[in-house]
Amino acid sequence: MHCHGRTCLRSGFAARALLLIALPTTLVSCGNGGGGTSSPSTSVPSTPSPSPAPSPPPNPDPSPAPLPAPGDPMVSSLMVASNWEIGPIINGKNYSIGMPLRPMQTADGWAFDFPLTPGSVHYVTSRYGSLAGKSHIVMRYRIEADANTQFAPPCCPGFLSIGPTMYFQQRGDDWNTDGKRWWATFKTTMPIKPGEYELDIPLDGPWTSVFSMSAAKNPQQFMTAKMYADRVGFTFGGGDGYGHGVYATGQARFVVTSFVIE
Image (tube, rainbow, N blue to C red; front, side, top):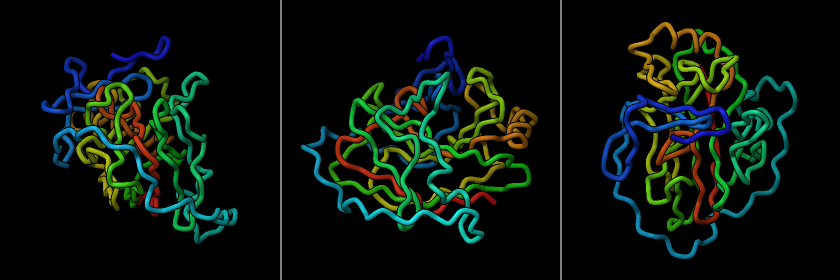
């Protein structure tokens, strides 16, 4: 179990612990984690060997991109970097250590750089609002990094990294109530590595809550959470939680080129 002050949360079904190297398990969440017992759809390779000295990423920092014009009907609010927050912020504390509060705008979307240890990036969310009537979330992204760069959860660097995992949070969540935060644990990526990706997540899929609920077994709670959703986004983790953060062993950048809810 992993606790932040008086808030101590567990993700997935509470009785089991995670050992990502060899055993399919539940992930434990506290304040900044996510959960569920569904196994991700991607295969799990063996734990990588220790990386050599990190190399620079293949792409240097781009020139600052012009900000989208306010209210531009051609630009989705989900593609405006300033509409996103890197957190979570609980009781005034930001659990993403060594990270800016907002991503940066880029020529083809928005981005942030993965921190080096002791930093970590946990949640990346936007206050989208209700998901009523929506059927899926689609994100296209790429990870720019040297092939030797590794990603690891701060709790246990020898375990596999996980993410991004799609996530949403109900309005008024107190970070300690089951059925308020939900993860698409059935379709995530592990381990994190450079490349271009697309996540197409159905909103009627087998989502799992922070403690022990599932969309299949608790449809009313899941429907209510979607109806009154506040934040939507994705998380990074591994080891003891889907949202307990990761760091990189070398320079690495996460670039979102499209984020659509429809």
